[in-house]
Image (cartoon, rainbow, N blue to C red; front, side, top):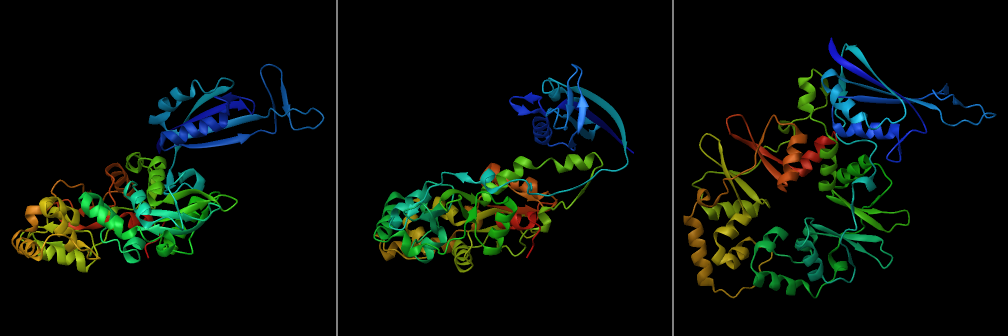
Amino acid sequence: MLDYKGIEIFTSEAALYRKKPVADAVIQYVRDLKIAARCIVTRGVAGCYEGGELATKRLEILSLNLPVRIFIVLPAMEAERVLNGLDGMVGDGIVALHDLNVLSHRVKNAFFPRQLMVRDVMTHEPKSVTTVTPLSDALRLLLSSIFTGLPVLDNQRRPIGVITQGDLIRKGGLPLRLSLLAESGRERREAVMNLLASRQAAEVMTTPVVTIAEDRPLTEAVELMLTRGVKRLPVVDGTGRLAGMLSRLDIFRTVMHAAPDWNAFKAQKIEVEQLRRVVDIMRRDTHIVAPETALDEVIRIIDENDIQRVAVVDADGKLLGLIADRDLLRYFKPEQALVCHLLSKVKLPFKQDDCRLGDLRRRLAEITAGAVMTTELTTVHEEMLIEAAIGLMIDRGLKRLPVVDGDGRFKGMISRDSLLRTGFGRTD
């Protein structure tokens, strides 16, 4: 038997709190507490009030102020907290408290609140370009943004394409990922800008564009992102004009805003179904190297497998650090242009002679991963709930996280894509 309380509020349709119906205000209040409470609102068909007012649906009396009953069921330990907040909300009504003996409490983790529409989550007033925008201008916009994609609009502000980092690399000749280019020297960035200045957005954009209407459910947008394999969606209004952009980051922020503390629920003996943990979604085929691995081998692994980082582990499999392409830029700061040349997908000319490049290659064969790796890591335990992992990603601005077991052994990596797929109930 579980110790629960029932909070019952008798009020009316006309009762308001901060210009909202009391029932709506109470629902929002209880929801925002993120506790194991259920709230039910029912409207009566007739009733009377202390002041003598009669409420009825009979047309000849024309009284619309029907009675409203709000019932909140919650663990007894949360009752005082909820009542304290309700005290100022119910200015017209009766608040009662009941003891309840609850046999069981079961709940399913829905992950995405089903009532949310795309417009509730999307980024408003996103940056955009037109078909004739020079790629250099598009690149500048992306370098100043946390996102890696831009909608391309026609003269009616309707999306007709999208330019992504991948488009700029595959079709525009961008030699480096945006994050690497942002860390490279000014001279290197200007060389890339000059390379792209003569070309326009229409030449490289992905088309036809996949869009979503702002009045569609968020769950529909997520399904569309997964089935079409896109990271972001232009959002359109009823006339087809751009209203916003929906990214995975927007979705994760919303999930974290709505998600309760599931571990606290379990501690209260509430049966929670469909909880997923990091171990369920992590990639186990992540590339690893030993701390004594030479950097030229690390670069080869990164380049041949089109990845951004490798894990450095000791002989027992314990995670020592990560080494990413950006770590190489920071370590070899005086030779950044040469390192950029080695990491580039498109080899741009540079002023340094081949002698210096050869010298760098010899140094890369002598320096080990252990000397360059990043050791101050944010990791997740394989038994962590995926909601907690999402929270870490958002707080730290990360797209991937290494996974370790209880002994610190490296188990794999999780990414935004794997979180989105598993959170939505898909693992294909």
